[in-house]
Image (cartoon, rainbow, N blue to C red):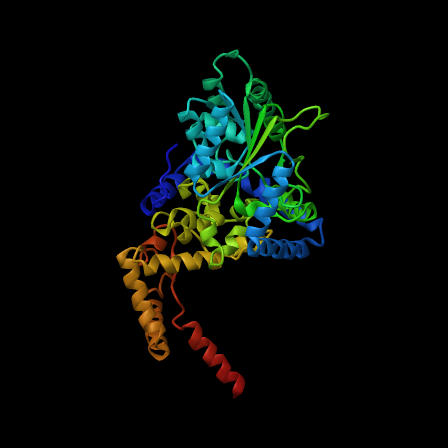
Length: 477
């Protein structure tokens, strides 16, 4: 599926998503599948808020000393027998990985779930080099069959219904019995397991992402609920870890702190089913593991965020809690955002990585209700960061001319308090008088975007400021 992260495409994607009945049916599962489970998990851990503060402080410390931790991590990886490759851009990262695969004569590559690999288009690069890349996470495997990108960073196929998945399996797994029963999720899972098992055994190279990179030991850590990550990195002769540079943590103890908030925020679990640490290639006496171990560290615009107003976004541990609780995401799903990172975190990260010219409309896809910041395990001030992007969009004249004109008028009055009070008081009185019979407006000039879907209540005739002044006067008298 080709997605174009531009301002007009986002609006078109959103309108299309709102009218997609299958998508709306699938998105209905987000409430019970994520929100309620997270609330229950947090309630079971009284110190959760304290852990959030500690996690925030830890990530801030790492970002302030990122160069030192990256150097130490590289030293430890090499000491364990691995190799480290730094990639400034996505293109460099893809070339590095393709070159490693070619050097080992790879024909088949299995992959664990990795958002940064989606970000740089790694699968396309591998396939363009004549190799097969197979996603082994069930959700990623499903969307690969559909030639789509993930619609959620932890549940890539959350936008699909069971019936859609069954149809795709019957279409692609045409070598299996056409009369087989796939009416239940467990049957779909069993079929995927059987098909993927052959891919695991045939793979020459395994590629995984990393939830955390531990500077103390040179280890990479992945958390999964399926175990596919373990098979991806232990069966092939070559294991490649691809991760963005901010995934570094100082020690194993620090990683354990972040894992305590990660699973609870993401899926409402106390801990993911599998937590796997990799430290270098197989050593003498090891029963399994790869012969070669490579780490590809990707910058791709992140270093430019350090020390700036968007540095807080680099604290993100990819739990997905912000989108799970976002009313906008609930309404349109992830594909409407036009790139690999949806929801509130995508509304901040996407413009930072691809430019505000292409992703500038995403920060406008927010009610600013604050739920995203309230549930973020590392306390990223997402609404505030979206405001910064809105300011930049406005400054560069990227917003529609009508919108800039309206904001300009509002700004003129807002800088003149007396005139503002007079104008708003007059407007409220006029609207209150016109709407006095029905008490609402089904159509209102300059507010068609609101009244297209809902009525606008008619004001009582007084502004909040005038009511407040009147009550203050009563109290003094």
